[in-house]
Picture (cartoon, one colour):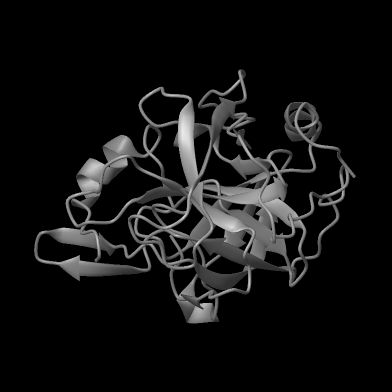
Length: 250
């Protein structure tokens, strides 16, 4: 099933409050990134889909995502690692912990969170975090691998743009556009052979090239998911300060 999301004006109003950003101009990931999972809603959306944000297993009991993926203020959530989720598939229960300093400033929104799982995930190798400050000197041609469960296609209908979902883990590659102290901006323009994220990929990983290092987590981008994938860096003092309470850092 695919979710048809309401038009662009309504989405813009929700951009900072609701989970944002899915993989576009990409392909099914299959089992290429088994440590990438999705947050499962308690009730299906109107189209029958269930996943509302993405994330990455960074230790057997810690799942990395975005602070704005907190749903309804509740701290108990479920995570799936199935490449194509259907209701009834295996989920892992845990407690959501957002950065207490989360805000909506552009300089550093602290938009980072983890889910501490009740039980360790077996059979899946966790992803690796970057070393402190290791992303500052990236070259302009650096490639990233974006993975997530968000909208896989954007269509332009008479009533406005619509976003199609099917709860399938997808993957795409993009090229570094710019970097600043808190953000990576990655080109996802299909005209230049890039792909990237859209609504529903929030919290999901942007791996450094073809490595298992999660350079940044997806936070936002342009409204119709065709230009820029905007991601929160994980090598900064701010991100590392939060993560150090939950995992050992490189």
